[in-house]
Image (cartoon, rainbow, N blue to C red; front, top):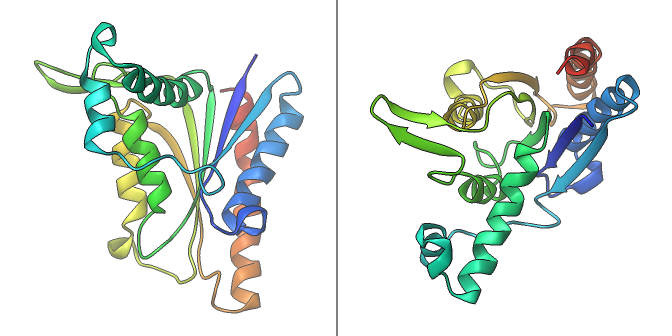
Amino acid sequence: MTTLLNIHASLAGDNAASSQLADRFAANWLEKNPQGRVVTRDLAKDPVPHLTSERFAAFLTPADARTAEQHAIAAYSDALIEEVQNADVIVLAIPMYNFSVPSTVRTYFDHIARAGVTFRYGSTGPEGLIKGKKVYVFITRGNVYPAAADTQTPYLRQFLGFLGMTDIEFIHAEGMSLGAESREKSLASAHHSIAKLVPTAQAA
């Protein structure tokens, strides 16, 4: 069964433009893939804990030497990683918060970036171990930013690529807070992109 993992991050929940764009994509994808399934994870409603020294130590401790608490911590991270590994298509709904991605996205990334599990270092450098995924990233912003001021896209491309996910499509909806006309124009452009991208998702 083909699986799409739909990850939301906005504090606005279902009213968020980023979430609505991701959900629209997922619905269109499901129409093209009726035997597939969509798994949704909302990082705002169910935030991942910040990485602490105790949690990091649990990741580094061999499984047979972990305490009961460390086993629970590692199992939580393992479940997040398994969710990504089991997905064929991954959708990220990312609003801009203070010129970056939401902190909930960063903490989520901290739990799925595990040495020896999702990446490893070899003689030629790091190698991502989560491969063969198609990723779609929907980024919404209140203002319009030139490429030189874009801190989100390069970061997400670098992080996802570090884990082995290099087949990425970015869809930006900017100027969302610059009035109704700007918002509608930006959303219309994003919807047009979704209509073109869904056939690509069908082949993923």
